[in-house]
Image 1 (tube, helix red, strand yellow):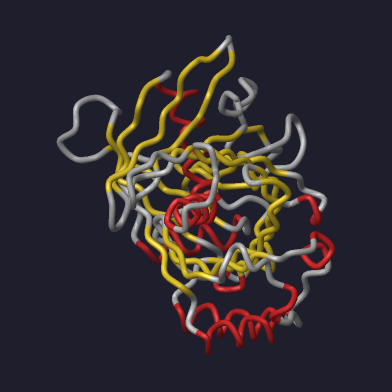
Image 2: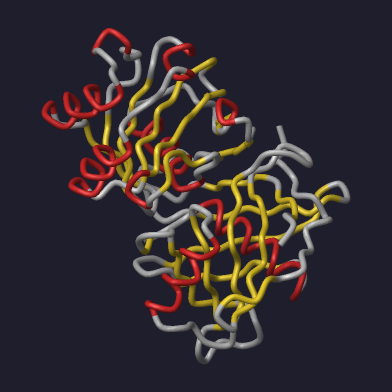
Length: 301
């Protein structure tokens, strides 16, 4: 199966916020619907952190990405990148990176763009497949470990789940692929659809453990997952598409020997009315980068 392709119609009329043009793009969309909105700011040099935080809060999306040409780099092939949620800075954001790749392709053409994020060197690629523009990122390295019993009990209490609701094939884990996530796999798709929690209590728990999101998933098949991602740590109840969590999940599946056949597809946001499709390609090497791809569509300013 080929990677999802992005729409070629992703140009927007940027809104001016605090003197900076903000493009609004939805990454991992299903055609002309769904996806996760991201703000994209391309600038000559990055604003100070307080300004970026204020812009992200005014945009109001789960993340806004800021990118400036890397000092000393030739042309526009290398960029310094930072990500801000409405309330905090995020170390890595997959959907905003996909949106950034679409914005860079629109302005500078199809290419592999090197991205220096706060703690890693990654890339986003814009290329053509069968006449369509494909946007794909390479995540930071991945790692995972079993979730501590005390953390698991706190998470189950937060969502009103019991241990019997979990899929025994996919033990609870803390996983990373550029950001830190708790992964809980549910045996019944209906329990995923029923997800609810107290956002303030979720924020406290997630920030205490350094989680970007909590990834609640259900395996329809070994290669197709439903997912929901509470993002209380960033001031957002739920994220409709989370590329960083997809990378973390894919790395975790590789670590436990799950029969992923080299790639998984993830449907997220369906329970929010914002269906989003993500694809994660998984190489055999433990800890290696995960390739995440999806569609991009324009949003009205």
